[in-house]
Length: 216
Image 1 (cartoon, rainbow, N blue to C red):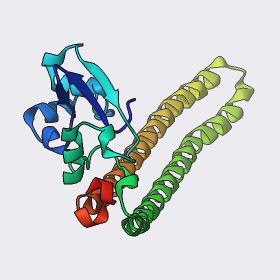
Image 2: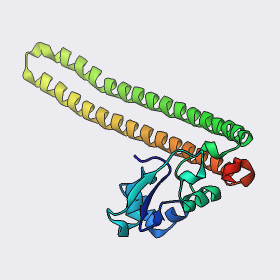
Image 3: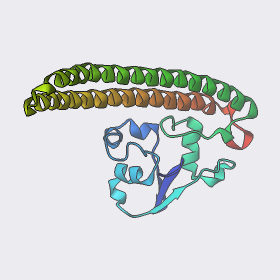
Image 4: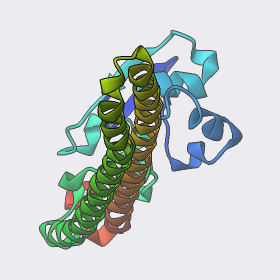
């Protein structure tokens, strides 16, 4: 996975992705592709610009101490706040803006943790319910088998194992479903927090007065 920000240089041109590019037909296709989890990477850039193929030099930089570390087009996009889907660069903020951003980001993180704890709690409750249901079938089946065992016949055991197997299969399906629901809820909560975090940052960063002098 590449770092924020990444770009490709080819024929003295700079190719990179930003919010505007994601809001196009090609960008929406990108968000459905294998690169949707790494849209800041070079693979995603090449997917968006198929004419590049494997040509050009991959570049990336995480040192925001100086805007000269980035191509001028990337710097312009940063100042416009066009990376709300990609990442944050707190070093471009003034101390005052950074404190305000950190405070709001912490509130967003606190809200996410509350949702995450609730999702986990719901998951454990469901798993317990699935276990109770499973035992409510298998325990009576076992007791019935023990009553019939005195007949010294294979039939009672086969009958018990059939119920046991059906109950186990149903238990496994319900457990998988509970796990799927939990991960989907957790993913939704995390994505919401991540988007909120980025949105908060760029609300600050796109305002000139919130950026350090060298980034104005």
